[in-house]
Image 1 (cartoon, rainbow, N blue to C red):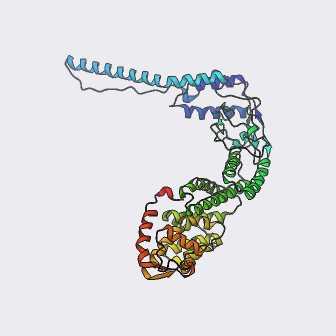
Image 2 (image 1 turned 60 degrees about the vertical axis):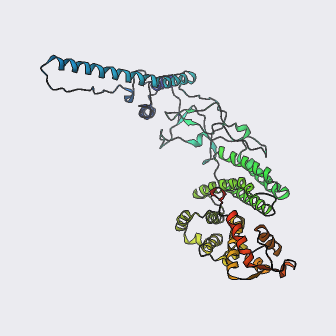
Image 3 (image 1 turned 90 degrees about the vertical axis):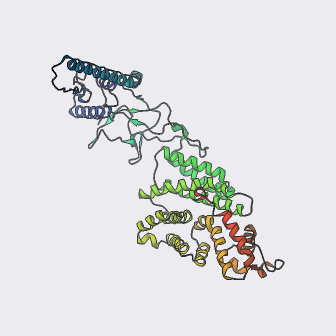
Length: 470
């Protein structure tokens, strides 16, 4: 049932709130909720004498005065000293009380101003600018000027579904703008009225769920045709923002974050490939990895809610990221929590095999796993595969006098023999016995290449800090 509060209740709440301070606010607020709830159930909100009722939490509490015991003294000096001491302590108490009163004076004045401005210190819109919507039932609820007292109602628990914003915009695309307004509404202390700040998201600028579905389809089409990541990233951030503002967490939300994460990984891989051609620096990929990490974090939360999605795929990405970051403690904790079914999933099994191969320094198996990485696991491995190739080359140079360039291509899983040669050039280690022969016939001079590889490795990889990790 819905209950309208009489003017007497509103004035009483205003009076009680003006008497609160930091020392009793929480206790008085809880008592006020319970009192109104009890009289609401009793049906005497309109007949009860609210003007004469006072909260127990606001009644003055008796304070024990300091008593000073002095040994009986027969001389007048002792009595005079005791009297002066009591007077001095009494003066200090008065000063402390005055300071405490001034400390809360400004807060009380703010509360009184709010009360005068909004009747109860809160703005109540008879026709709110948003449409309360319950995502669990799919029905629009009633306005904010009433309190729902359904069976099992608890005034201490806020039903946020009643105040969820539902968008009204039909625009498929809009630019991402960081919200600086309040996206939620705080509950009134009595549990019935809510505080709505003047600045709040405008439903006319927010797209509802059915429009967001159309937006996602169009964005996927644009990505396939134009592959413009800067524009797509902006639109996906805007789409995610509309989902967040409307508190939409369902299978569609999972799909949005999964697609955005994959697009970010693809953009990162493109940047890495260009960096190997000396056209970009690896630091250009950090912004894209930020988007990927945000999506990965939200997906973990959505999967924990039991929403369906590609859980094993992104679990494998998470394991590979830990491998790259060398986060052994987190890795051990995660692996210990995996079930047999999760470990048996192809993507997860592959990621765990990558971790095992690096732990055992089995580079032959590692590069085989890199070449057969499922989904987009190879895109994450791209972040650390060059470092492992350099380490493997240094190890190979210790055991051989010469190494055919074709053998290096196959063992280190290069895309082509030309890519293997360019990698040696990038490490300043292209010391071939026969530099003028064809690439398929070239032999790497291991004795000359080893110190060059070592120096290049120290320069490029040893100084990478935590900011360079995923």
